[in-house]
View 1 (cartoon, rainbow, N blue to C red):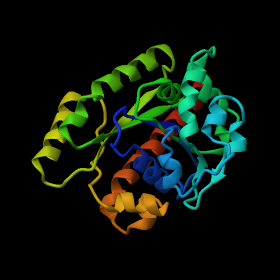
View 2: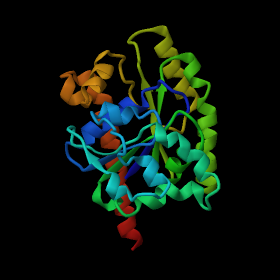
View 3: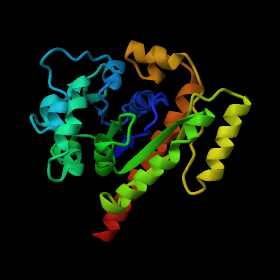
View 4: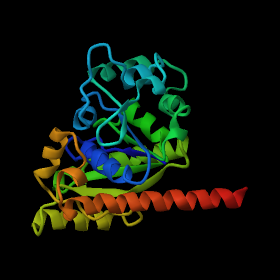
Amino acid sequence: MKIAVANQKGGVAKTTSVICLGGVLIKSCSCLAIDFDPQGNLTTGLGVEVTEGQLTTYNVITERSSAKEVLVPTRSGLTLLPSDISLASAEPELMSKIGNFFLLKEVLEPIESQFDHILIDCPPSLGLLTVNALAAADAVLIPVQCQFFALKGLAALLETIQSVQKRLNPDLKILGVLPTMAERNTIMTQDVLTSLKGRLKDIPIFDPVPKSVKFPESNVAGEPIHTYADDSKLVKPYQTIANTIMEVQSNGAKKSKVKR
């Protein structure tokens, strides 16, 4: 199953969520993490340093290299398609290509059968790279910071998802919204959670991820949260999402067999 982790706002824990969710999934499944952000935070957070001349997602999305050539292992057990600032120049290059919304989908096809799950860390924008990720994905997970202003851009993201569903990827599902950096028992966090549940009646709202210094510390250490910190409160929200992903995938497999 391919899951895009997307929100055009930065600082909402997209990358942290990919690392944590991937870390939980890798305990029982094979998992590929794709760094599709020119900032390369996922790459760094998984303990990989891109060296001069190393192949990255830029080479893959511009069709200079195959995805298989770019894969690198990480000590977390996740396989990674790394990124660096070179990816920033890919978007203008892709604008003139025919079928440019489907490039990521096409380049992943030769390798996707090697993995049970593929997680795509999207850039903080609604540009061509994010649309490529949504066009390639089976589902999208939306991290939202528990701050009031963080809700303002959610409508634009949902509109983009609806447009992708209508024109590019009718099978794309919204896996759910993940509230992040929640401060327990604060009025702000409670107001945000109430607002999300009130506005998004047809979209699952996952249990919030607590705010903790352990998350940035684990990223610096290049480890998923479940191996870095022995704290069930930090791991539980991602375990719930992992369970949801496996349930959705299982139900999809059953429906496919019925159709045949």
